[in-house]
Image 1 (cartoon, rainbow, N blue to C red):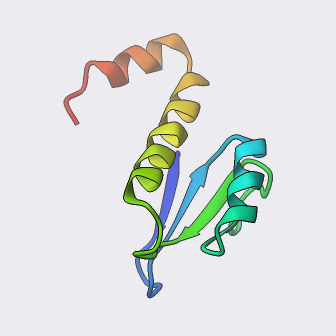
Image 2 (image 1 turned 90 degrees about the vertical axis):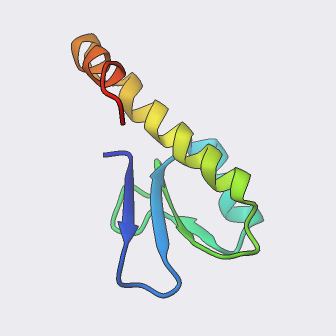
Image 3 (image 1 turned 45 degrees about the horizontal axis):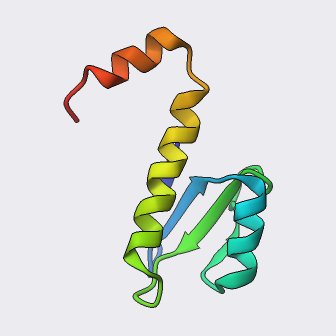
Length: 86
């Protein structure tokens, strides 16, 4: 799992895996970001989706989370993911 999305919250929330140092920096910089809700607070951040957040930042965080999780998978599982057309 690289992301958790809350479908019932308004505004929406997104929880992503994140480098601990970068996550701490983001939490200090953005009021919309907190340590991961119901997750390991060091390795996950929860983002309250807001139009004030740069869309590119959110996209980069999603990509980084995916890359972080898939990098820790066994090589066979990574190759399986690479051959799928999502």
